[in-house]
Length: 108
Image (cartoon, rainbow, N blue to C red; front, side, top):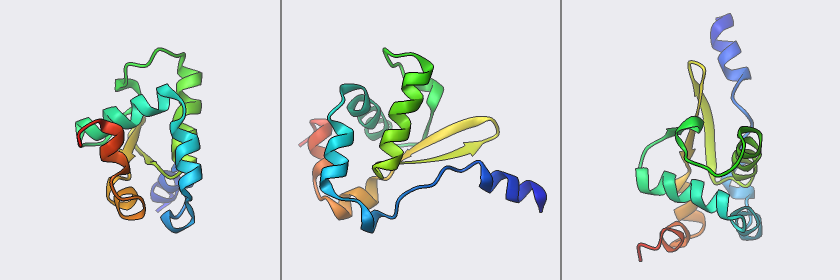
């Protein structure tokens, strides 16, 4: 039971989709590195480890970008072993802001 609790302690907080505003989402997506992360997750169609993204920034800067996306409600993060995984909240974002992710991906 202690292991299960420890795993939950490692999961960062995620905002409820009902509390996310379009302005928060657009503010997060104004940066090209963050748009690139969202685009890669959208194209992959599956969750990805932080280290699998080919980003033109340092590891600490990449961590900042992932945090901004998580705090804006665009991604969900969790651990598998020692790897931090990133999941695009595609269904939730599509429900709250229909067509936004598709428009960002350029796949109209």
